[in-house]
Image 1 (spheres, helix red, strand yellow):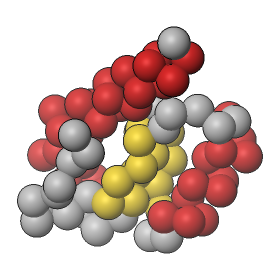
Image 2 (cartoon, rainbow, N blue to C red; image 1 turned 60 degrees about the horizontal axis):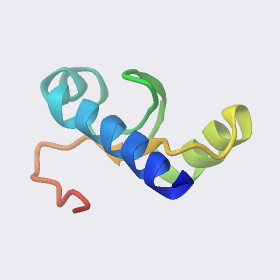
Image 3 (cartoon, helix red, strand yellow; image 1 turned 180 degrees about the vertical axis):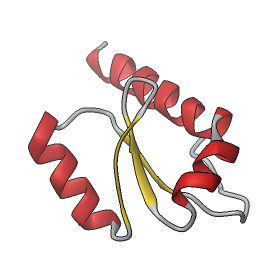
Image 4 (cartoon, rainbow, N blue to C red; image 1 turned 30 degrees about the horizontal axis):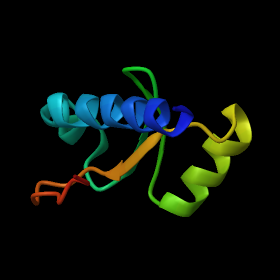
Length: 77
């Protein structure tokens, strides 16, 4: 059950990325963003540095981290 809840939360964060892509493109083009609870909580040019910083700050939660690009993204199904 816990895994299902974590995946649901991850999907909600992913949906936020998809829904707000145009705004993200305007603010964070070619950067990685970390999304949690319907907001960008951090961003960086390096996804590893971003992940380390975010997870050390708020814990290992189902945060969605994605690079903001104009190219289509293959989302996890």
